[in-house]
Every structure is written in C-alpha cells, then in structure tokens.
Image 1 (cartoon, helix red, strand yellow):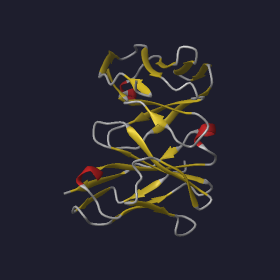
Image 2: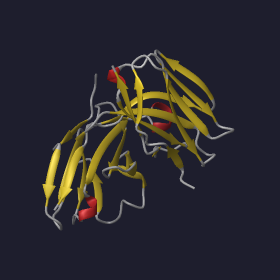
Image 3: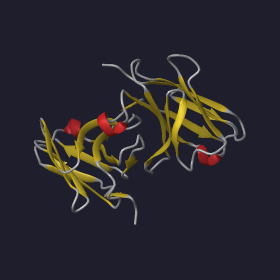
Image 4: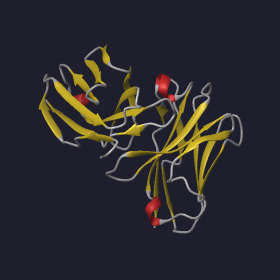
Length: 115
Length: 110
C-alpha cells in the first residue's frame, strides 16, 4: 500500500537553529499538508499546498515557517529559528483530491525536540 | 465553545464488547466527517469517512453522523485487543483543513 514517508523520525535541535523536515508524499497525490501535535494535545493544521503554492495556512504558520516542493517528489517544512514551543510531532499528509472527498494519508511523523 | 469536543478517556473494555466513541462540534458548516486511528508514535490512519448525515458501515466499524445534533459516533463491534489505540474524530467544511478532536484512548483487554 502506498505510504507517505517522513524523515528524520526524530530530530533534536538547539533553540534558534533552522530545521527542515522532509516528506515524500504518495506519488500521484496532488494536495499536501503539514500538521503538528504537541504532546497531549490535538492534531493541529499548519498548512495546505497545491499546485506549487500555499492554499491555506493557520495562525500557527507564521513567518518562521515555510514550505517547499523542491522537486517532483519531496515536500519540506522549514522552521527558520526554532523555539522551545515548536517541540512537537510534525505530520505530513497527502491526498489525491482535497480532504473533503477522501481524507488524507498521513506519514508516521517527525518528532522535533527543541532544547 | 470548542469547535470539536471529544472525551479523551481512557476507555477500557473487555474483548468482544461494543465500543461507542463520540464527538460533538459547534460549526454547522462541517459537512465531511472522519475517524482516524492513531497508534503510539505513529501518524493517524483513516478508518471511516462520512459525508453529511447518516450511517456508514465497514466490517466491525459503523460511523454515524447527526448534523441536527452536531454529534458523530463511531461504533466498534466485537472489539479486539488490536483495536487498542487512540481514536480521533476529524471534520471539515469544504476545504483541505481538518479540525481534529482531542482523541479518545481505547484499551481492549483480552
């Protein structure tokens, strides 16, 4: 069964450093998303991406965050200057159509720890 | 009022029991309702998807949506220890943005 692959599975970084979280969505999917889950809290929407541009973003997705699809297969989330409160599980997801039709396929996540 | 509310549990049942999981929501614009299962340190896995009100059945799982009450349910029949996980409800209007509930932790004891 096709999978969404995320790397690394765990990343530890110092406060103020830049991190890039990487995702390989399912190959024929067109819509890409990032969500995060702070320990013990809800899964929260960060951003959706379609046709090489951001479709929607949440208030969490401020100027410290950016997304990119640098080639035909990867989808990345960059955090420019990490804060302690950025520590969370970050999930990438993709869908063939918008989530309203079929739901997403999520990756297994990257655990980001900011120290 | 929170947009989506879900009792976090934990919920513990014996093997073979019928499990009922529920969410309430406040946004009447939500039209698409989903249930995800999440195992520890894994991403959410889509279990059921329902559009608008009504029931949907898939094997041991039944999803119900009552838009008039803003209430959705997931029933698991003949529960198994392998069903032990966190169950997340999620919903959306007509965008790609899913709003999740807190998740209910379920333990099915052999």
